Image 1 (tube, rainbow over the protein chains, first blue to last red):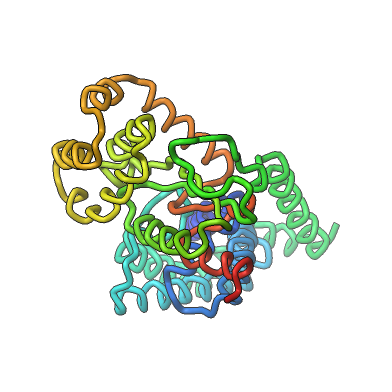
Image 2: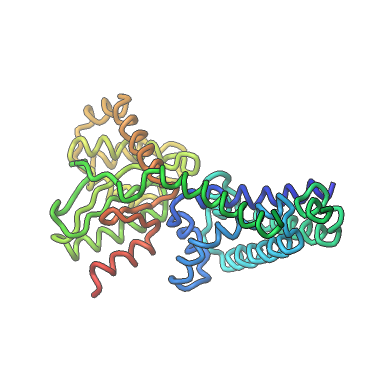
Length: 145
Length: 203
């Protein structure tokens, strides 16, 4: 069961990042700007780099490669999402959609907080059950040889 | 192959695939500048050419239209503006209807007049179940020929123009509105528009 949850968490990151890395970065920059937490220069940097960080994290979690480190990165990303979306909700920023899945899925910020919190908890549990989490992973293959 | 080598190979393969896909996509620099006479204003030889992709029901687009209108009035000879349709029909229920009225107004040379009214009253008609009576009243107000308008609305031609323009926008990577191409450079949202225009007009 734990490895299935690992695949799901990796899949969430892959789905969230795929459309963003393929689209012009300006689309994600528009999303980042809507959260009003960073100076302009940092918004551009985040818009260009963040989707790649999500993609690589998702890939490593999905494949089970450097699993503990990939899960810690995933945990950090979920925490960042919760804080950023949470502050937008507290400040009543006019967000029509979170922008987290590019144009594939439109989620209301409240739903994103719920989804990210659930994923944060599951990722934390994956780290606690690291042996079962590594089942059917590239890590387990390298551990055997 | 050890674990570190495999990790590097996986990352390189994925990055290679994505870069390959992106290289075969149309780039924003190839944004069209064809003549859409009824929806263009300013000096065609201006140093700054702006194409705006908008949805008339999108609040951010209304903000952008207001900003550009003021900016255009301050720099009438230095800017050329062309509007393209990008109705977000999955988010805004009157996106297509408002675009249709705009296209029909454009065919009577009344695009900018109707655009001003639509944007100014967006928050009111966006709430209505059917905005047609309001749009018809606006059309009368700007002096449109109502028979021609209704023939245009009933035809498939205007809708086709809008859908074609949206498809062209999608192929350029547009997914949100307002999206602008300033001398071919893509910027999304009014904040980026303002930042980009500052590079041309620093004062």
